[in-house]
Amino acid sequence: MLNNHKVSKTRRNNMIFKPITEKEELIAKKIVDAAYKVHKKLGPGLLEKIYEVCFCYELSKNDLKNRRQVNIPILYDGITFDEGLRIDVLVEELIICEIKSVEKMNPVWEAQILSYLKLTGKRLGFIINFNVPLIKDGIKRIIL
Image (cartoon, rainbow, N blue to C red; front, top):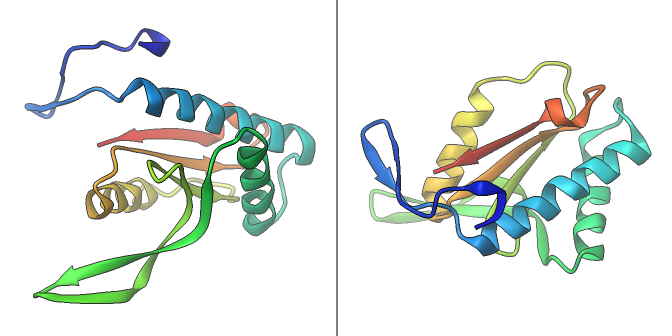
């Protein structure tokens, strides 16, 4: 498996989780590479929408299917509601990316992406904040 990840199941908060697949790991590496390229070319300080469109362009150059501003329907009390939640970028229908351009990260965004992962049945997500001097400090990987 890539990046020396364990093939066996992992334990978190006394619960057992399956490891991320090799396919997800490969896509994740391309996501991080795309974020690095965009940050290197544009630097910090621009609007989130600009980073999002350039990030998706880089993903497409790497043959990764992606969709922007994807609505997540909510099932509540037996009723499906279509409005409310929206994923910034969904990559290969597997990985959720939330794009930010802020001075300081808010812990609620991690809870937000965990909720998105639960609601969609996905396992892997990223919060990518482009408004940092070094992009490595702006990328947070979240596994459910």
